[in-house]
Each structure stands twice: as structure tokens, then as C-alpha cells.
Amino acid sequence: MPAPTPTELTRLELFQRLWREPLSSVAADLGLSASGLAKLCDRTAIPYPTRGHWAKARAGRAGPTPDLPPAPEGASDQIRITPGHPTVRRTPVRLSPEDRREQLMAVAARIIVQDGLHALTIKRVARDAGLTAPRAYHFFPTVDVLMAALARRELQAIRTARAHRINTAERPAERLRLSTVTYLRQVAERGVLLQTLQTAPGVRRALRAEQRAIRADNTNVVATRFTDSHRVPSDVSRAATAVLTSAVLRTGRILARGRLDLDLAETLAADIVEAGNRRLAARFQAPPPGDVEDA
Amino acid sequence: MVTARRPRRGQRLPPLARRELLLDVAAGRVLEQGVLPIGVEELAQAGKVSKGLVYRYFPEAHDLYNALLERSLDQVAAALDAAGDRPDLATAAGDVAEAYYRHVARTGPLIQIILRDRFMVGHVSPRAAAIRARVARRLARQARDALGLDLRETIACLSIGMTMPEECGRLAFQGELDLERGALLCRELVLGVLDVAGRRGLEARR
Image 1: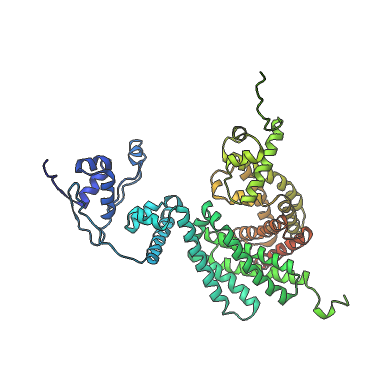
Image 2: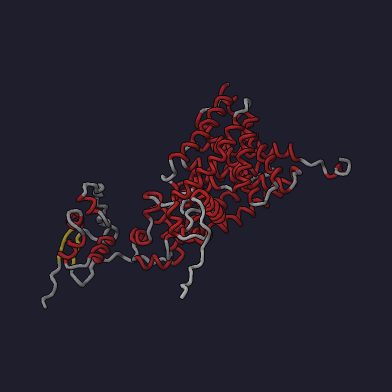
């Protein structure tokens, strides 16, 4: 059996061939399997047509051909293909499991913001992160798990920022205002990602219980404060806190959709929370403890 | 030999009654789950019918949720229209909020769940969308004329204000809030939104 002849070609040549005919036929020509060639393209950052491209092309509905990005670090522009002998390697980067997780989540976040939720697959994440798919699956067995982890990370960041800011306030009213404003600022910054994530049923299902627990916790703290400072019955202050929190969250959604700018959203939400509290205090306020008997 | 009869799965019902029954069961499941979609299998089991029958009434999942949505919106739109007829804005807003609140407290936050679910994006039936747009447009126009705010801000205030009856209603529906107390709370909170909007309108006009 004759030794397979190696083929030499540049990234550009391969790129052009891949957008002229289907990957599987190019692969057959080069003596590779289709997935072997796909992996090679992943390693050398050559975009190739996705599933369905050629059917669309025949129907005249193919999208535009992407540009060839520069070669990733460590990969040369010359590709030497010897069937049976993988030659192109990316320089492996060793990361600790935590860092790898972080990296994958960052990649996923980018994919979601750029291309939307439907573009998020573990394979795509692996490809963009420069890993083989199984290694990415090791960290995130399903897309839902990945999305839930991302959402958790975002929510945690928002909460941390909020708690941090609130502690700088001294008066309770000021604290409430700061908490509202900080939340909205965070939404403005991270909005798109979190909003997109929360539309995924999987994420909502996964986070529902814990979100509820956290919210109940928050509600308790704020409501107790409100009961103490305004002497409002505790059921009213609990309900009011829950409702006003939802109002702030709604403002956040409007903000993230770009229907309000940050300044206006901040003022509106904070004013509405304040006005609501003021009205409730006026309406439900119990007389000071000493007068209860006389009333 | 007598062949064993298949167990009766349920009584035969006239189509409209069956449809209502299925909608009731679906509403319960949606409220419990809080997220769309619910499985057809699950719905069929809960309604004690075959899957085929569910498909017969609702060929696609979206048909089911649209039917639920339209039913709720029909119920609530009449009440909102009546309440919105009050001449003075504060009374109108308070009454609209209370009408919506009582609807949610009685039937649960179905409208919110369905309208806000990603599953329904691009699938809300024209009729449901039209009812919703009509009610929202009317409220927005009324508020804008009385307050002198620009449309964008009015819509934002309206949307934020709507959380009050929705959430108070949800709490009352879940039994975490007394019905009458919730009505009071809801009214005060909506009036709070109106305070803010009114103040902003005054500033804008100056």
C-alpha cells in the first residue's frame, strides 16, 4: 500500500474551497473524514458552511459568506494534510477547572449576545473556546445547565453590587433608593444577557425555586425594616415590598428592551417606590405603640 | 361470550363544554408550572381525555394558550372598560387597577404568564393582541391627556403601574394576602405611580 501523499494548502485556499463545494466532498478529496476536516477547520479558525447551507444555496437563500479571520495563535497559514496523521494542533492551554468553567461561560455569554439563545450549543461553545466537544460537555452536560449557571452568575453579580452599594447608605429611605438605582444600573450594564437568559424556559425552571427563596429573604429584610420605621402592619409591608420589587424588575425589563433610558428609569422606579411607601404609610399607619389602648 | 367493554374514560360532553373544561384544566397547569408549554400528555391525563381529543380541540400548543389568553382578556377587558369610563384620572386609574386586581386574584396571573413567555413570541393570536392593544391604547391615551407626559413615559408608567394589580392579585390568588386588604394596597400603590407621573407631567409642562 502506498504511503498517503500529504497535501499542502494555505488557509485561504481551504477556506475558498469550503465555500465552493460541500465539506464532505472536500474532505473526501483530501482523504479525510468530514468531521476530521471540520475539526481541522475549528483549530485553524476557518469558518465553514453549517448544516443546511447548500440546500439554502440551491434555493437561492444562502446567507453571505463570512470573511476569513486571522489564524489563531500557534497555527500557521500553511496547512499540511497527511491522511491518518493529524498535523495541525493548537497549542493547548492548561487551565484549572474553575478557570475553564469561567472561560466556557464567557464564551457562551458572547455567543448569546451576538447570535441569540438558539445559537448556543455546547459544541459551538467548545469550538469557540478551542476545546473538543466532550471536554465542554464535561463541564456542562446540557445547554440548560450552562444557561442556568450563566444566569446564576449574572444574578449573583447584581446582588453583590447591590448589597455593596446599599451599605453605603445611612437612612432607610436612602437605602431603598440606592438599592433600586443600583439594580437598574446593573440591568443597564448586563441587561441583554440576563434578559435573554430569563426568557429560556429551562433557565426559569431551574432558577425558580432559588430565586423565590432569595426574593422571599429580601422581602423579609426590607419588609421588617418598613414595618419598624413606618409602623405598618406586617402583612401589608410584606406584600408591598414584594409588589414594589416586581415593579422595579419590570422597569428593568423595559430598560433592557431599550424603551427607556437609564436616567429616566432610575428616577421613575425610585420615585414610584418612594411614593408607594409614603402612601401606604399614610394609609395603614398604626398609632404609636402607647396610644393603642386609647384608640 | 361477552367481550369485555373498554372502561369508560369519561362522559361525552358537548364540544363547547369540553373545550371550557380543557381550558380550565390547562389554566390550572399553567398557573402551577408558571412556564409554557405544558405537555399535551399531562393535560390529557389531568383532563381525563385522550391526547387525540386534546389535539382535536387545539391542533397546536399555541392555539391552546391563545384560547386561554383570549378567554381571560375577554373577561377582563369588559371590566376595565367600565372602570376606565370615570372622568377623573385618579378614580379611573384606581378602578381599573382594582378591576384587574380582582380578576387576577380570582383566576390567577394567567395573562402575565402567557403574554410574557418566550414560547408565545410571534404566536399571540391577532385577536388577543388586538384586545390587549385596544385596552392599553385607551389607558395610555387617557393618562397622557390628563398628565401631559410624552407617550414613551406614559407607556412606561402604565407598564410599571400594571405590576401593582398583577402582583397584588398574584399574592391574593396564592392566599398570601387578604382579598380586601390587597384591593386597598393595590389602589394606593397605583395612586403612588400616578403621583409620580403627575409630578413629572407638571414639570414637563412648565
